[in-house]
Amino acid sequence: MSELWHVSEDPAIEVFHPQRNELHALDEPLVWAVDTHYQWLYWFPRDCPRACFEASDATTDEDVDRWLDGDRMRRVAVIETGRLEHFRSARVFAYRLPPETFEPWDKFFVSHETVVPLELVELGDLVARHADAGNELRIAPSLYPLWDDVIESTLDFSGIRLRNAVR
Image 1 (cartoon, rainbow, N blue to C red):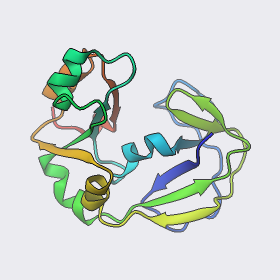
Image 2 (image 1 turned 135 degrees about the vertical axis):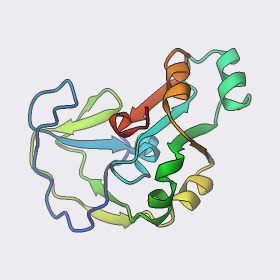
Image 3 (image 1 turned 90 degrees about the vertical axis):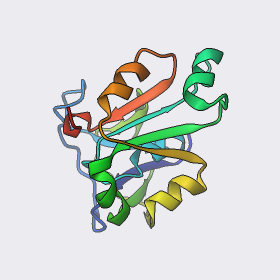
C-alpha cells in the first residue's frame, strides 16, 4: 500500500475521529483517506466542485485521443470560473496517515478507528502543485456539460463536490 493522506484546509487536526458522511454508501462512522495516486483529486479547497479524469487500463484509444490529447499519462482537473480566486488563494494541507487500520473502498481507504496523523504538509500554491505534477488544470463556466460527457466515456473519473457546481 502506498502512503495514505487526508487533505484539509484545517492545519490544526491532531486526531481524526470516525464520522458519518451521508454522501457515501457506507453509512457508518469512518476516517477517510486516499493513497498517493489519488491525492491529486484533493489539491483543492474542500467545497470546490471539480471534475477530474485520467486514463485507466480500460480507457479506449478513442477516449484518450478525445479527452487527453492522445496522452495516456495526462490527468485533467476542471474547476468553475467562479471558484478560481478561492482556488488560487486557499491554504490546503495534507495529513499523512498510518496505514495499519485502513482498508480499501473504491478509490479511497477507510478506517473504523481513531487515527493520529504522522505528518502535516502544506500544499502551497495549488496551481503550481498541479503544474509540477503534470496535471492539466481547466477552467469552465460550469462543470455539468463536460461532466455529462465524461461519465459516458471509458475514462477513470471523479466528480467531487458536484452538488456545489453551477447548474
